[in-house]
Length: 208
Image (cartoon, rainbow, N blue to C red; front, side):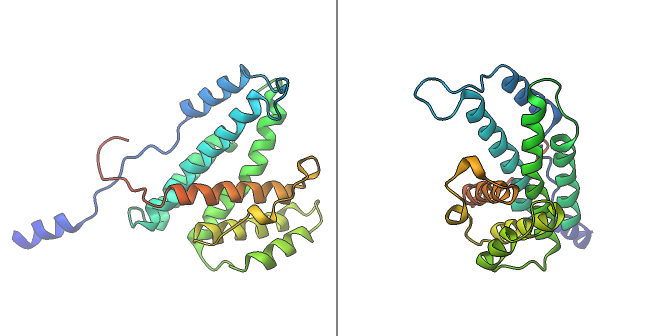
């Protein structure tokens, strides 16, 4: 009996942390619907653009909390992939009607690198030579999205693993950014998120 009790105690308790849900997404969309995307006089970014950055940051943090708990041994790879799938399904499925359609569509396109990079990290075997990867990505034709995404996701996986990127590689000319540059901006957001989650962990429990 003692041996059985000891074995039972050694089993890791499951976490019930809610990383993202439909209500959270819907609340963000509602907030953006009420926001102005026209910059006020003397300001560079509009209210809507600032909110959109917060929206992106929130999603990025939610996904990377899953990765961080995997790194802490709280989740198996399979559990982390399953939870990542749940977040991606909410974020990447469907578009709101009206003026936000193009804005959210653009957001979803930029967040492709987040989910692809997280999976690449979980699978392992990615390249960690950031400088070479950035040069390779910039040399890929804009129409070859899959190849460019693969390179950008590799950079993202390296960042999740602890590499430094990508502020010095991001172009200053915001008006002429290509999709690969947009992905580098998201990878930089991922980098900042991983730093903020350095001490993140969640104790086993019954609620988030």
